[in-house]
Length: 358
Image (cartoon, rainbow, N blue to C red; front, side, top):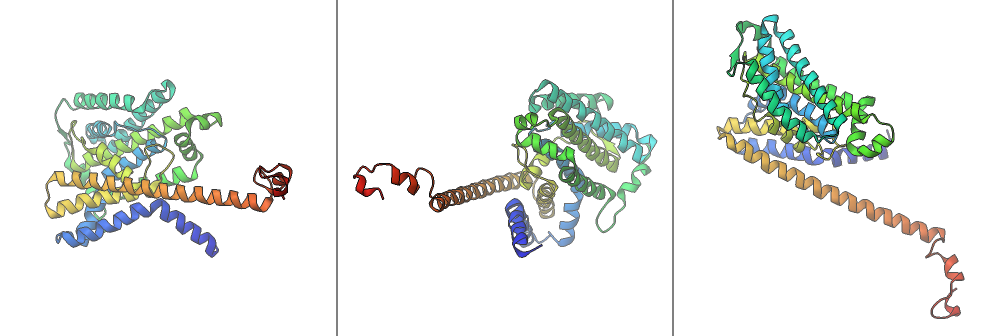
């Protein structure tokens, strides 16, 4: 790779991830400066601890956002899958988690198929399923929190390696697999195409219905996996739980740079957003701040990132437009053709008389 190519790659990475990376770095510096209790150990453990729940959910939600849609049902999906996993806990840890995840996958695929076939807004459908999944979770749990009969079933999830639990490793694996899926498979490219320009994608032969169904299937499976792991880790499930999971996952995606308009974002954006949000939570916990402080800081940071991205996008767009105009003007002057070229000036009469048109 020559210096020119490397320079372009670095410039592109800076434009795509510069705002999010800068905000994350500034947040780390600020937290270490103003919160004495925020040590390196607390930062690492607190950040990695949130990767399992928020990271996995945000990864699935990001796929629907890239497709130009939004899955509002991830919180109730996680609660429902958690109840199903606890109910299946007698079969063992892995089977219970797999059953809960499979239920989320099937329900997510059904949502996506309904949205694609009937061409209904995903907000309308997923708000309805959000309520429906919550009700189903209450029915399966007999309208009360439920727990495992054998608490030793969850022991493998409590093991730690270098501040990382199996749940953290699963979360990291899911985000990596998401990046590979979106960046290196035909299905991932089709999801980008659907989110970027749906009518054009349909006209070009992209299977829009299959892409939307796949996106919501992934979102449902990820939310269910996150809920199942969290509930099995705690050996109990509350059918009314995970009420703030949707807000956390959406905030992580937006802070990371996933576009609500579709067609933009990847696993790196999800990672940056999740790390930023988890750092905020870890810092607030270390400082002993009230719960509402996390919401206030997250909201302010989200507005800052969105504003900075808007300004950066406008600046880049203006520079490209000016560059295109300069190239067009230079081409006209060099080519000597067109309405302003010398050929037309020689033929057309001048208002000041024939002697002026040379």
